[in-house]
Length: 327
Image 1 (cartoon, rainbow, N blue to C red):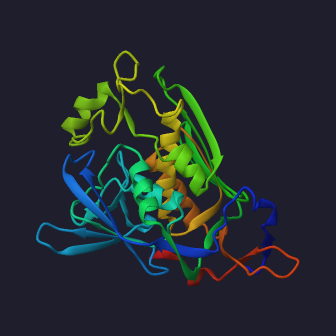
Image 2 (tube, rainbow, N blue to C red):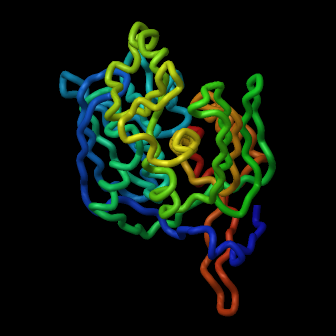
Image 3 (spheres, helix red, strand yellow):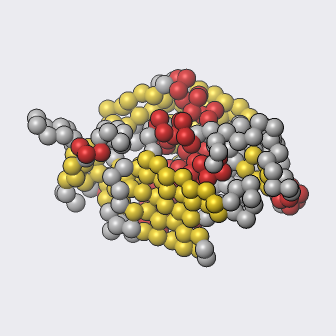
């Protein structure tokens, strides 16, 4: 556990943040839940170091339920990622919000919400990124600790699979393959940084097929879905939205966005490469569960202070000092 890894060779391509962060000031957004169709307001507030991301879900009677944004809190991954108990206190569709926090390097925040589903806004993480940049990010005095992948971990489900592999950076390699000619096979690979997330991932919208709408409505899903917040593919395999796509391969970029949000629930940023083929929320959650259940597959590290003539290094630290996934 005392091994040191020289990170000087990735300084140009990987933004290694030494200290934890939070927001400089509160910021509020309002909208409609894509599945519930109900309005909700979310208020993001600065939080102390080591607080992590904590949801305060305000019930109709005014009581507040606290839900930590951790994999151990995941209650469902059907069409979205839900924290808590569906029959009790919960908050649904957290993945875009979590992706924005992870992608923009924000570690600690309290998310107060007056509903049970995070607003879908325009179907992407873009509005969250804009809100966070509006108030700015505050650096705290506590060291940020990373979960560094040290051996491959893989899960499979039929033709679908996902895996974590060692890598000097935070990298996503995602491939999708749909029968629909409007999507087909798409691949996206890239090292994650705030700039990369903002420019290449954050504005990719959720998507669906017109043929599935009535089935989803009957099941109580997609009640708030519209062309304002979703890319919709018609029965003729054409994009219905008047404005078309924001990126040529927007579909796979949105799958990357979802993966970033789902893996943010590890409770610590990972250093490694996440790869998936024909994945989704369930597979992302299964891969993360498999990783965190194998303590030989990762170690917890933080940066050391640079010494004269030497660059900063990563130093492994005692895992019990920061193991939020077991809470």
